[in-house]
Image (cartoon, rainbow, N blue to C red; front, top):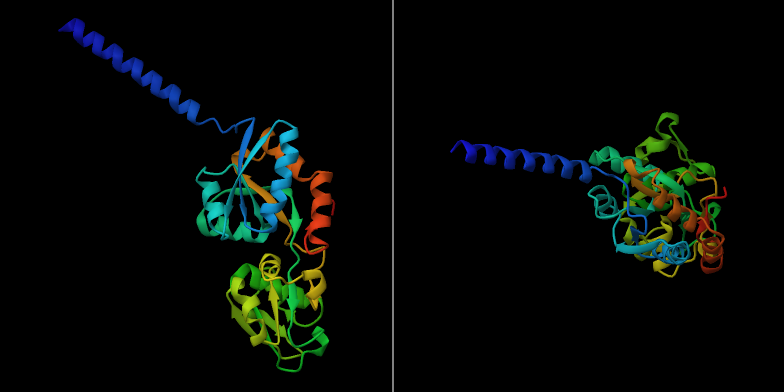
Length: 273
């Protein structure tokens, strides 16, 4: 019995040591050197990363794309480890997501600016809008604030100084045209454009509806916008060499040329700004 007890103790000790070794291994945050799984949203982000994927392949890096149709799941999947990185969001949205979900996702490389535009089926310029005109804007806090920022930048409203970055329609202190703001689901605004005098529409939704930001907008977000998009990763991977290799592929001349030729100013490469 003593021999059996010693043998059992030895087995348990060996198993415990092995388990400790497994924990140490699973704690390794280094990514695969030869393959990354990147999350994107359908549309321009998907198209552009497809080109970056080809560039990365020349450098020995395989990129697998996972395409999403909303703005929340790509971050959820990244934080849970189902993705190595994603490419679809600007920093204000990322900061809000981290705060709301207790995550630690970080930007590691600039990608593009999808300039938000203001459109109208009734008027050819913002100056033509009558007093009391109805104005549609996204009902989510981040893009709603972005739309108001564009209007303020062009002198159509003034936002309370301490509310500029998180502004809502209740933070407007000057509104010379007495614009009547109507908050709408961002994806539905192109379909509802005829029901308002003007509206702010995100680029991806505009393009999907056959609307050209450069040709059709009556007001377009400037290139110095704070809403530049980024490649985003978990904090522990921000300096990972494989991630840096992907960022290099994205910020290549081949990708820049594709963006300029494909989108004709409706999407802008932002890493040289």
